[in-house]
Length: 78
Image 1 (cartoon, rainbow, N blue to C red):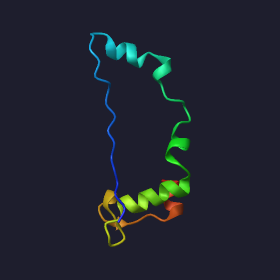
Image 2 (tube, rainbow, N blue to C red):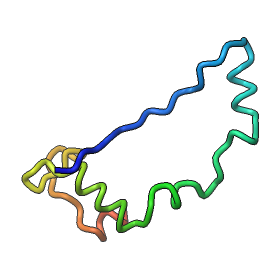
Image 3 (cartoon, rainbow, N blue to C red):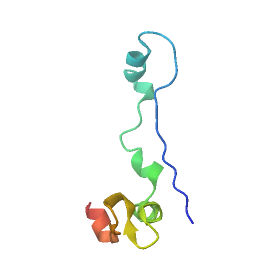
C-alpha cells in the first residue's frame, strides 16, 4: 500500500512587526516560476501519485465522492 503525505507550508516563525512584508517582498525567497515541473515529476509520475492517493480500494476516487478513478486522458484534461 502506498502512503500519501499532505504537506502544509506555513510562514517562518520570525519575530518583528514587518517580518511578513519583508519576507513576501524578498525576491531571493520566491520560487522560480517553473518549480512545479522539476519538483513534482512527469505527468506519468504524477498520475501514479493520483491513483495511489485517490483510490478507495474499490476503484473509486475519494476526491470525487467515490466516482470511478479518472483515466490518464481524463486526468490530463482536468
